[in-house]
Image (cartoon, rainbow, N blue to C red; front, side):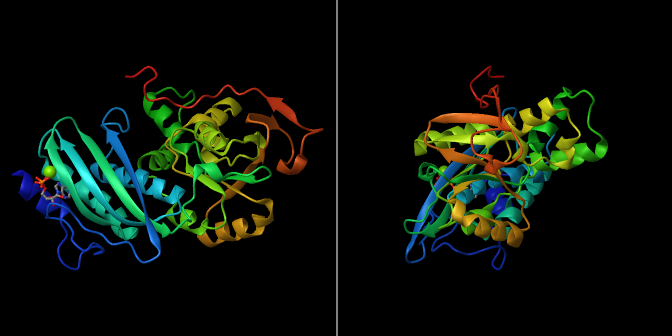
Length: 334
Ligand code: ADP
Ligand code: MG
């Protein structure tokens, strides 16, 4: 099977299949897209490399899903609605069963988000998947890392930490190990993340800052703090704990939630006056949104145990030293 047959067979849609949003789609030298009037384009790229971003044990359909999901997650963090994407595929060999599965996982998620595959590049080499995604957001309304204000609430969506728990189970480093049920559930979080696109869109005009959690909650929170030139006080007792993490030791649980990575949840800030609206949005989306901290003037990150995020400085608050640093791809490279 030649390069062009492969591309046409697995990645081009037949008429009536999938979204048609581009002025010129797949098959020419360039695709041409026109954002709707009054909208701006948000663009982001993420590459997945075998052995570094995914394990060779992952099914091709889940890999296709995840490759696009991590990119859609970046759009979500900006409050952008998906429009189109390109796919740079590097393949060690042509394996049709693999390609069929990969394309299905990829295009099913793309269709779910009305996101059209408008082009790409296909080459031979070690397995790697590069995706560039484009979304649209009303002019001037993109959510940024730099907008957090002193006094804002800090929120996180869903249950961060599950993907890391599954990864450690794969590595055989959990003692005791996970039950089959826990393993399958957390493996789903690791291999098939659900990008929070609807949440991101719902946070337009509501959140002052947002980021998606890919490298660990505290590491990514650090980006928001630095870009916004603020600090935060974060209550460890307000962190959402998934049923699977609840069965682990307190240390392991915090390691996974605070520094796990690969979560693709959104971390965002809103003025305290908006608590009602945030709660309503969570209810509408059927998504747990947890208020975990407060933005403060003093730079840096302060962690504490205590009874309530309301508690302000004062009694009942016990400071916890930060022993978590963000995952670094070039630290101890495999
Ligand atoms: P060029 O040589 O002009 O870069 P290519 O031969 O690489 O074009 O690709 C031919 C057409 O197929 C282009 O429209 C390109 O966008 C598309 N394409 C190539 N690889 C992929 C892929 N993996 N998925 C979707 N479209 C692809
Ligand atoms: Mg090319």
